[in-house]
Image 1 (cartoon, rainbow, N blue to C red):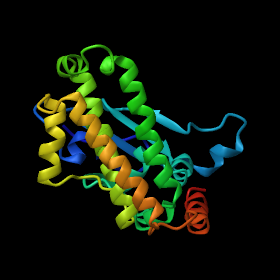
Image 2 (image 1 turned 90 degrees about the vertical axis):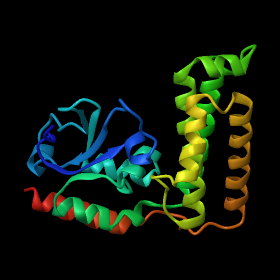
Image 3 (image 1 turned 30 degrees about the vertical axis):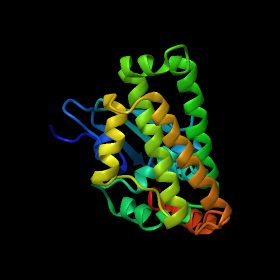
Image 4 (image 1 turned 180 degrees about the horizontal axis):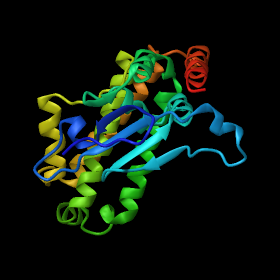
Length: 234
């Protein structure tokens, strides 16, 4: 299938299971992108969209300014777009964006990755994983197992970020086998919870021990990039 991207797209990557190395037969192809609209459109009363769906299935794109703001706020999904190993479309502007990706990282990412995972685990528990017979419910609901797998992977990514200064997107064979065991039901709910607690403890200790990340993102670098993009789109 020929790749289709919104007009003005400067970067399109594959995210989700296929980028993580956790895909199986029939896995969706999740695509995320960044687009630029002509600068004069911002002079109108009706502003251009900050994001859009499509045109392909499972495809979502952000306007470049919105993407930069979310990345500076350490949105895990947005940050992982910058480290996706599968880049399907990139222009010179997209290459510049990838070249400054380290500027988006700060210690805010430590808190965001941990808080997002914790919040989603609580939602997971409220969906029935902590009801009577949790292992049976976990084993019988592939949606809960898939969600648990991805939340554990997110914690692994956050730990790698604190220790090495960038998120981990594609997992190695050992992690792949362990994560897929959660998704496939070979790992029960209680064991998945223990792994989560271990990762959370390691992440907390790594943060307390001193991060390699700066306190704040490189706002000047990002703003300079965005202003050049706006000027070039006049």
